Length: 120
Image 1 (cartoon, helix red, strand yellow):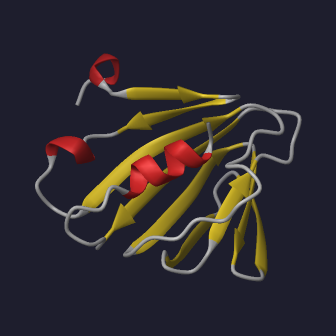
Image 2 (spheres, rainbow, N blue to C red; image 1 turned 90 degrees about the vertical axis):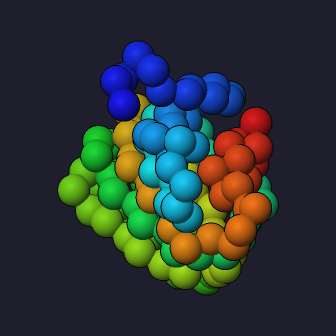
Image 3 (cartoon, rainbow, N blue to C red; image 1 turned 180 degrees about the vertical axis):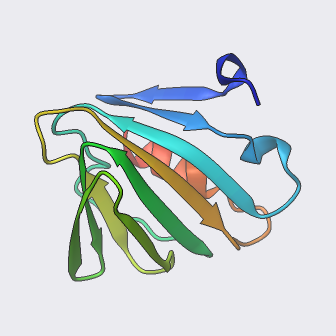
């Protein structure tokens, strides 16, 4: 998929960019998350079926999965069962980019929308 053909969903202090999952018949949704300083998914955790893989490309990203806190920097990754309650935020004063891949989710579920809607 060409960069200028990506579906982009803006939210307060950030952008989700779909990376082709919406055109794929399998249960995989890759997307790019760009967060301005202090941006987060909001005060409430989310959960969904499947697995979530996060790779911090630039900046810093804090992920809370259940009661565990993970501070990620460029090059760090995280993989977890997505039914565990989770949330994220950019704790730094710089822009953060992360690649997120959600896989194995239930038929009809749209986990990317859950992440996007939580951030509005």
